[in-house]
Length: 240
Length: 293
Image (tube, rainbow over all chains, first blue to last red; front, side, top):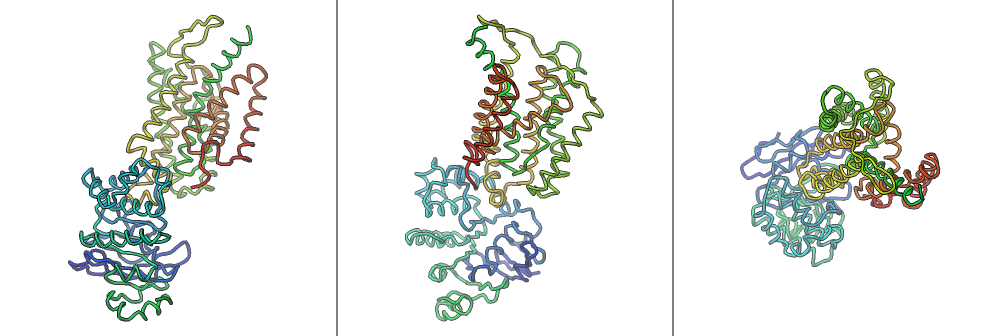
């Protein structure tokens, strides 16, 4: 079991996970430092989304440990994990499409009993959503939906934020907005794990990058190292 | 009697059926909408409500209204508790698997039915209405109790709608209905929501039964028709849609009342079943349901 240091926000060690009979994660190790953006990078099916879902308790860990600060998350019921301070923005956003923007935000606030002050702070980060509060979230544009998904998660005032491909399918202006928000959150002290397929996005917002391959963390490198030696990206995902 | 008053009488009878049906079907619809469980035992919770109403009203002496009011409060609570225990012992252990829960609720249907036969018996037993006021219309007199059933059902349906759309509990139930995994990722204890919804669905059926039992008597096989009609209503209205359930219940109840009076009850059932077949062919998600989620 990893002995989590004072600078570590989240530590995953020796994590095994299965999808039915198929093993997806093989003893995966991961450390997220406080206030950093750690990017999980790898091919489709490498186990990135499974890692995030396992941290959220949505997929049970069959072995290993997940610690948030001093708290062991492994074995907690899934609904207790967000209450501990981990927020999740799933791939494809997974908004409650039949609900209004305001109701989606309310769901986020309810998770940790946050109130109006949190709501206002979050809406200040995404002012566009203020004008859409009564609109059904399923009718928002893709970019607006992504903003709402992030706003809903930030309503938890999380210690750790998990973002699963937030820029997928968005136009460049929205991608820039998402990157800007991730950078702002880092300044606010939120530790973030970002699953991202776009190399430019990784290089622009991440502090460190973990290369996930076949359910294992092959290597974790500083982003400066990656900028200087893009061959690592090519080595693991064949792009760059 | 002339055609107009005859039609009015048929429509009033149909509205009583609609009122009871809407409550029963709403329970079934909520359980399917939120949990994706097709509860084949739903009619037995209806029957239990009626049987318990008879037992409670018989046990309490004095004015019939006392026994009826006690039954209206206690019977749904007991039925809700039984449903909650069944959910914990059976459905949760099956991980709410859609196919397995159908088989399990068929089993629950027979167990509840046979227990009722064993302890309550095969007789149909009446429950006295809380009052026997008749409203005199120019053409005929009509039971004030039956009109109060319509009013009580409307009140309960409006209350349910307000709870679902205006309260935190409603927000939690809807979030679980739309996406249970994401709901968990936002701190919603989905297992507890499922337990509550299953109990609530059974309680709605039990309330409907308590309301109707002074009109139709309690019997251990009385759950079959409400189950069939509830399925018809939720398929036509759209599973999980409160608005669809109410509209379909009024449609089926009125057509049942009117066609039964002017033609025959069998024809009314044939038409309702044909309507279901047409909805399944031309609009499988129901009149107010969404195509997929």
